[in-house]
Length: 130
Image (tube, rainbow, N blue to C red; front, side, top):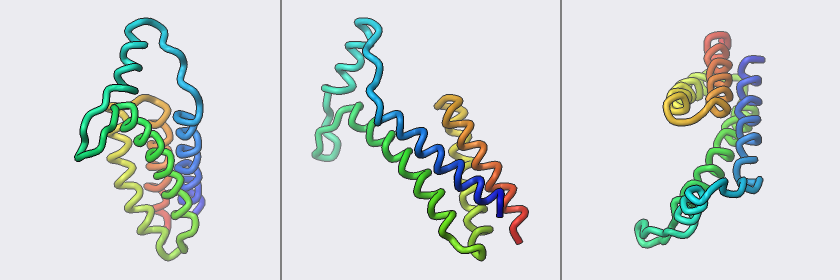
């Protein structure tokens, strides 16, 4: 169970660390190109099924969601009973395997390391919990 609990805590840490991405102010644009991109991301809105949203709106929603989801998964894992821990570990391991591959291909080292660490812990827990 200690691998299982460790995985839950790693997921919760991922959510907390990731929340800094939308709780802290972004750095100012370094040049004119970055300023233009920032302006477009913030102010250029498209119609998405009757709702006006900018790419910045979508990105911020993703940032918040990616912080809430690992926190929720970690907490749900901790409050689950021992009898369901093995099944939860199996499901989380598989989902985190996919997320880790996505992270390797499209993201960067910080989320990848948290995802991989929790995936490995859940994988070990899945094998060890009887």
